[in-house]
Picture (cartoon, rainbow, N blue to C red):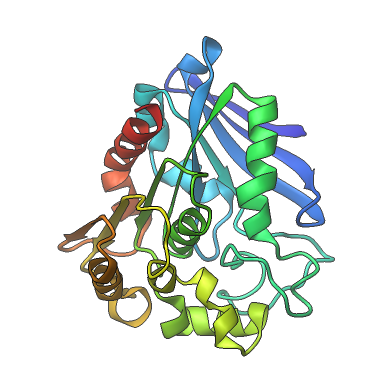
Length: 276
């Protein structure tokens, strides 16, 4: 690994690293915040997945998470949102290709060669973090928008791997909204049966683990009714009795102003679960 950034922050260090990813076949950046407690003990890790068009920088510069991670003694790891590079397939649209991985393993060309973000997030990145940083094996996962979709589907699809999961403004039913239909058709092909393992509302029907979900959604979000559909998440959880805390907030939009307003409560939620 090559360390690209090293900045003191709330008594700890906000770093950014680059490494060669075997899962993705390209160089990847990821950010890691090490709170001051990391100097004395091994700590739980919260993985954060960002949304469309983002890199590892958006969360670490806008969310204000370091203050709360230091308070609760949690390492926070934020990878880039997709494979990148000249050899990596891309698309001129903002919602497909680089910066828009949807955190799945693509099966269709030209995406299948590099777009294996599910393997990267679930297996390769945690193995790297737990080998090179003072991390224990307690993991939580969270994210925003496309990253909220990634956090929910990865947690539900890997029972026992995470102790906590939360999301801000997630795409909860991608198979039923334009963002997901476009991405899934490109990455997974036209067979909708292949899409279901990447759709939170479908995964809830057969989930073997009742991992409680914390979801915050702004009611002033410009994508609320067209792309996010928290009503479908509420109905899916109610149908199977899955524990859900869905909080709707008047006035808040889809931006990081929303995330920064409630990130402290999310980190506290994860800290309780990972240390309990």
